Length: 129
Image (tube, rainbow, N blue to C red; front, side, top):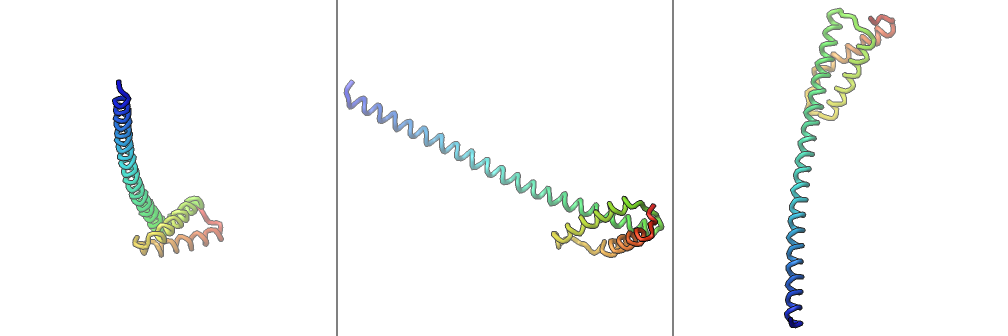
């Protein structure tokens, strides 16, 4: 073989290798971009799910607060531990409402005040169940 022919083979092989490498890089980059898009989509869905769960927890806390206040009005006696748990529900509910001003909050304001007043009165008189 002549030197020119060998140079052509080497040059062609090198060109083919470069083309192969570029194609592989393009495929890898495309897969990487699709993976990043999928992760971003999952991140958005997880964030939406967290928001839904936080709101559900707030609604549940509101239900506990209102039910507990109804029980107080109906003369049901409670333990200090039950009051403490309800006070924690009030704190969690208020934190959620502060960070979500669009969430309707007016339903528990008076109930929470009554629960706290009753708690303080029972604490002073040592009259918990």
